[in-house]
Structures are given as structure tokens and as C-alpha cells.
Image (tube, rainbow, N blue to C red; front, side, top):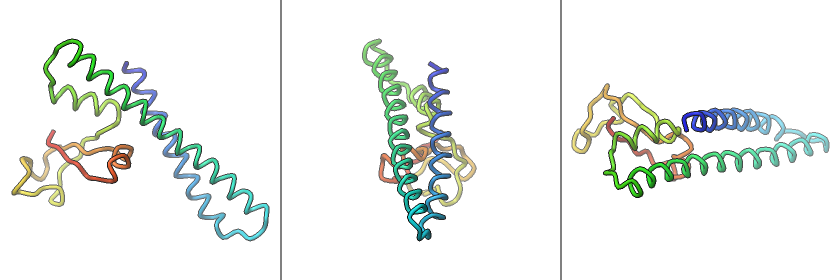
Length: 139
């Protein structure tokens, strides 16, 4: 399972790098005037769409792996949900990542962590799926 998770993580990073590269190329080509450059722009847009779909598919696979593990361990095996195990799995799949809390992250009235504590945030792929919502949890 760790091999599969690592492959998903590496593929996701590769796709993000390719997508960033294509975005910069598209910006350069937007100012083009001749038909060859315009065709290149169209080709890049098509490639960008293909890469976005590949990123969505990779995220879908991560979420499937997460759901399968949760169901197998806590539904079928009749185990009790363990927040630490769930958090560890989500981190291995690249769904959340550790972050050192700053003053901007801490609301003393509501948060049970302080500046300097390690908290977890959704990674970019889940922020997109949650409309950019910044959900933070104490580690």
C-alpha cells in the first residue's frame, strides 16, 4: 500500500509541475498574433485540460484509497475510529500536510493550539475540492 501511495504522491507532484509549466507557457503565448502561435495556444489549452483531468483522476484515486482503508479498518473489521490513524493515512496519501501554526492561524477563543504548534491543513488538491476552505486541525 505504501508503494501505491508513494506512486500517487509522485505522480501528483509531477502533474502539478507540468500544469504550472503549461500555465507559464500559455501566458507567453496569449500575446501572440500569428496563426501558428494561436494554434500553439490552442494545443496548450488542450494539454492543460488533459493534465487537469489527470490531476482529478489522481485525487479520485487517493480518495478511493482513503475510503477503502477507513471502511476496511473501521466498518468491516469492527474497529473504533482512531483519529491519529486516520490523520496518518490522510497525510500518507497527500490529503493533508503538517504546518507550523503562526499568529494568523491561531484564534485564541476557538483553537486549542498555539503559535509554533504543528497543525494540519488540507493540501492544495483538497483545498480545490473544498472550495479553498482552510480547515486546520491540531496535530
